[in-house]
Image (cartoon, rainbow, N blue to C red; front, side):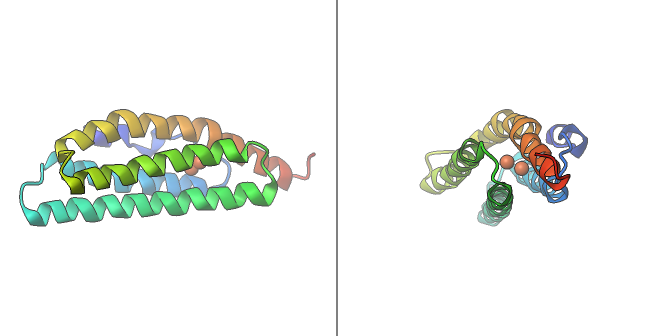
Length: 146
Ligand SMILES: [Fe+2]
Ligand SMILES: [Fe+2]
C-alpha cells in the first residue's frame, strides 16, 4: 500500500525546518494522488479529482523546489546547479505525466508505478543526499563556521 511508502518517518530529517514540513506535505499530497489512482477513475468526475490532486502535488513540489533554490542561492551553496537540475528534471517528468494523461497516451493505471516505484524512491534519495547536504551547509553558515 502506498501509505507504507509515504510514512513521513521514512524521510530523512534535514536541518532546515521548512524542508521537513514541505516533504511531509508533499508525501501527503502524493498519497492522495495514489489513493485516487487505486480507485481507478472511470467517471469524468473521478478523473477530474485525479487531475486536481495531481496539480496540487505538482504545484506544491514546484513551490518547495523554488524555496530550496532560494535558500541555496542565499547561502551560495556550491552544488546549486546539480541540486536544481534534479528538481527541474523531476518537475518536467511530473508535468509530462499530466500531458500524457490528457493526450490519452497514458492510462491512469500506468501512473501509479511511476509514482510509487520511481518518484518515491527518488524523493527519499534526494532528501537523504541533496537536501540533507544543503541543510547541513546552511546550518554551518548559520553557526558562523567557514
Ligand atoms: Fe531538493
Ligand atoms: Fe526537498
